[in-house]
Length: 114
Image 1 (cartoon, rainbow, N blue to C red):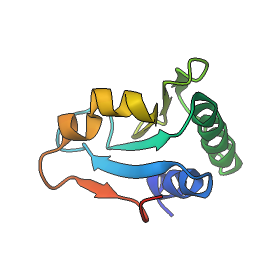
Image 2 (image 1 turned 90 degrees about the horizontal axis):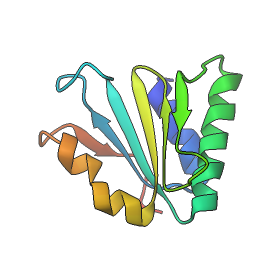
Image 3 (image 1 turned 90 degrees about the vertical axis):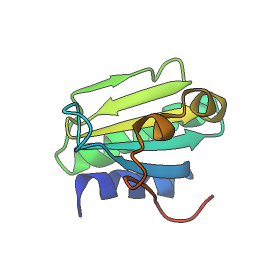
Image 4 (image 1 turned 180 degrees about the vertical axis):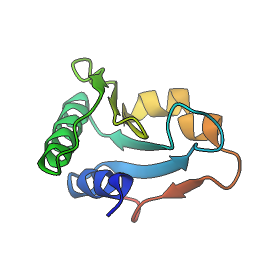
């Protein structure tokens, strides 16, 4: 299983909303993929960060850094080639990362809408 697939699976199991994968490999050198999802509350943002961090650690994969967890509005987990963005729903609408990084064919949705 690819790193990004495992992250999506972990997020889905903990009821993250609208899990989106943006392939940015051809657009920038900062990463290969963004995974973007929404949480229904600040508390869920924090819980999703924890579940991804713990699940990936069990696979021997540690983040380069985690930012924004304490605020619970927009948390970022940086795994180098994959960067996870966990947004409180309102904050996600404000920044619209999918639209900023879309080239028309590089955005896919994981699983079904929850």
